[in-house]
Image 1 (cartoon, rainbow, N blue to C red):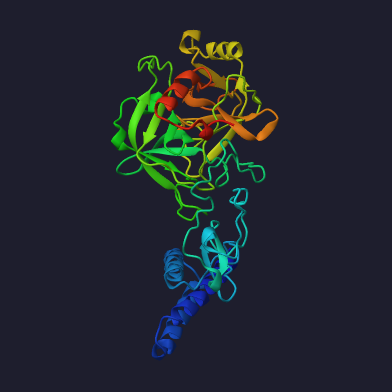
Image 2 (cartoon, rainbow, N blue to C red; image 1 turned 180 degrees about the horizontal axis):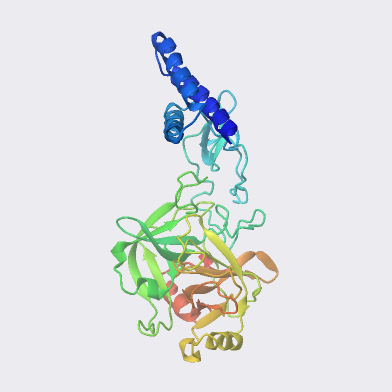
Length: 406
């Protein structure tokens, strides 16, 4: 045991000598050596008192290393890379070298963990190809068709890709621009949401943000666009007490301009046919109850649940059928896949049968029992059930049907 102790003492003291010499002037080198040699001779035949001395010396040694930086840990971090000569990191949209498609299908970038020199929303761009202006890829008179999802691969982590759901908007509270809930674009000047989100707030306190994806970044290929709300329209028969007929329209003070990452969702017709098994809900709300809000738009695939089955499953968790008004519908019920707190007002959309790349809005996130519980569907406003009111209000406002119909 004493031999081990002596070996440790020698190694530590010699190491300390090396570290200390780096921080001492050359003139004191001989004095330092004499001092260390005396300590080594003393500690090689340790007493209890000297054990404590060695412990104190070890603490001094380690603190010296941390302060002088003479010891570095291997953190297994990727080797940093940089752009090649005459290239710099710029947002994707500011590099003419990277071509864009006007149909919007090329606006999505897969976020892979690689050795890219730039942020995942930037690219190494030749200096002579940098474009500081943002082109509007759609002409002023060109109107995007409704319900087109910009798909580029399959998301395995429940995160949407940039521009994938161009009808999605974030409802925010002024002046801090705090995320408040979700909504969907029906026309450049109209947003659809849940009445319970806006039934107790003044229109001038709301801000609508379209084209958002990552709340923590300003480097998306196209910038988000903010609009103020001039009017809130609640369903004529909406009840603040029971939350029945839970639907509302927000009239904006200015229209959203034409952009590849901003376009409306389609409203279903009376004879619309959906793929009820692959509907999608999007939002920046929690993934699970108690979690933080998501900063990147999430997407969750959920099936529509038939009404009788939904009532039975909700009754099993003590939600009486009277709580599920005919103006509501159900979706989901698979553990880990659900809308959650903060998603209120967000759209539930379903693929159109025979046209799987286009979507109708079938629901609006309303309420649920906790989040993502197995065999417990979430409850959504039934858009088809309340469609006549929506169309009546859109007609009254003079909104062209081409924005929200196939």
